[in-house]
Length: 236
Image 1 (cartoon, rainbow, N blue to C red):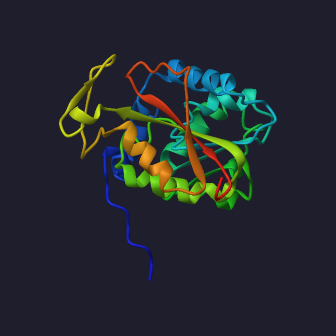
Image 2: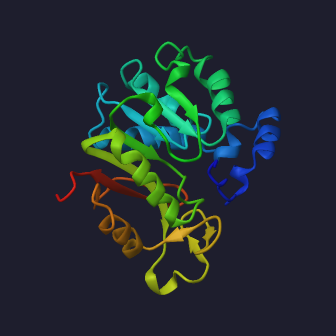
Image 3: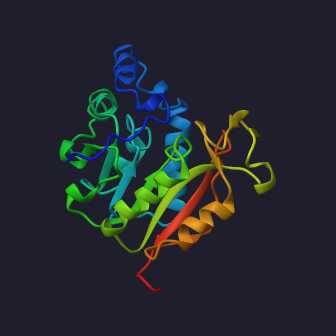
């Protein structure tokens, strides 16, 4: 039997909505805007955390390549990979951002794919770094666990998975929280979601493949917080 379709958690999951936005020239805005600012922020943060041109990186929830247009010129040709649930956004980003900047030779179309289950195995590549900017801010925490399970076989030991979340104090987690700076109001049970640090630590504790480590040096204009999980051997 085919797998059950995933529930829709946010407007991003509405493919027809995405098609309309892309047709209206909104492929940058629909991924949150702040195009250059956040693209540069992601690249510079990863470099500060040891990303070298020779490393292989997969961008999870790459959208229209807000990070990609900054990372592709830095990484060696063919070393940037990407997935997203919305093929229409990937195609728009490739045609309207990657190709016009002359980056297609460094980032072939075979290096990106559309799926909603965090499957990067089709690339046949072991990655040094993985990035998911503003993905788990729009999904419940159990989807992070799905991602960790799917990603682990394609990450080298010692590889780093960086992802952003909105955090809330345990005492406030059951109610809406206004995130500052930015003023985004986050919620425990619907988009935009917040989580607690103990909840993230519990996710790490349930996984033999990952451990949670510090992720300093990140300053997001809307108060998303960076989290790092390191790929470890079972039993380490």
